[in-house]
Image (cartoon, rainbow, N blue to C red):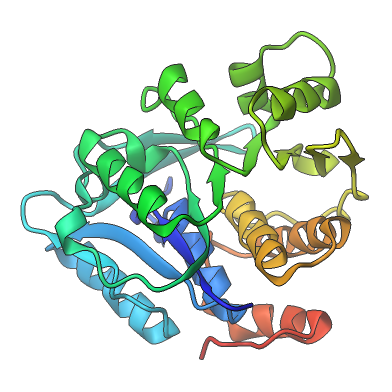
Length: 298
């Protein structure tokens, strides 16, 4: 691993039924996990000049994560999401006009060589943050990992397809594949066509308890064995945990089948935790030992 991954997008607080509030946001979660796994990510995001923004900085400092890319907004508040659990699945109401909607190019830190640029779709609902991402894509020249995250009403087909056009790897769930590629045909054939149509290196389709399916540019299909059943304590954040290990495998040159298995195993471990991130070093140390990689968090 010769360079650090660049992570762009939202930091926010998830508000759960019953009053629990948990720090998260897909890019923040991915950066949190990657830091523990020794990848030295740089997170580019924006928080409010409020108590939640201060809490984000405190959490990053305690975990040892680089906070130089975390901007502060005096006009907008730190992002917030209201979560309802329906049938065991999380449903999201994302509050508008958050600080992460207004990431600024003139507040970016110096950016060194980048191994990979990760971003989702939610933080691009506002023109300001979209413009900064465009700058980062052009300036860094890094290969792009797009983590599709379609949350109504904060996405449009034209915008998402434009983002896919500049990506090498795209991850989405089966419902998102339906929305973007239609429902005609089985998942594997639609994903294979999607990869060819958009000139991708790989599409990764997460299938919940059924595991994951990956299709590469040559049309090869990788379907690792689904993970063992896990006692689900927190249904939010498993996808971000999966993305983090997938990125780890890409920047370390791991075999893709092995990478997908490791990503599934780690995502299953996060399902057994409360919240999308954990500050329990033991959760990470075991994986680092098994995978023979450095552990970097406290």
